[in-house]
Structures are given as structure tokens and as C-alpha cells.
Length: 63
Image (cartoon, rainbow, N blue to C red; front, side, top):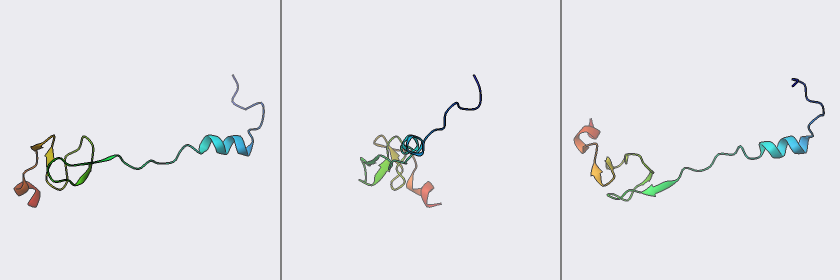
């Protein structure tokens, strides 16, 4: 196996291969407590709850 390719890759073939590198928008869900949009499997930044439980108390969040 050699390092140098045997044939030149055309611009169309190269660019069509690179066309799938776009970023996708994050999948957002509504928080079950406050209804704020958050990422799934993360603590809500608005109310501090995860899986219908309060993980971060509001007094800790205020500090």
C-alpha cells in the first residue's frame, strides 16, 4: 500500500464527500417542571431539575 494515490480525485467527487460535514441543531425537549427548552439527559438550567426531581436547589443556583 502506497501513500500516493494512483489517480487524481475530481473536485466533484471530493466536494460531494465533504458535503456531509454540516452541523445539526441540538435536539431540544421541554422540561417536565417548568416547560423550558433543554437538551435531553441534562439538568434544566432554568429550574435545576432532572427526571422530575430537583437536583440543584434554587438557593445554590442564586449564589
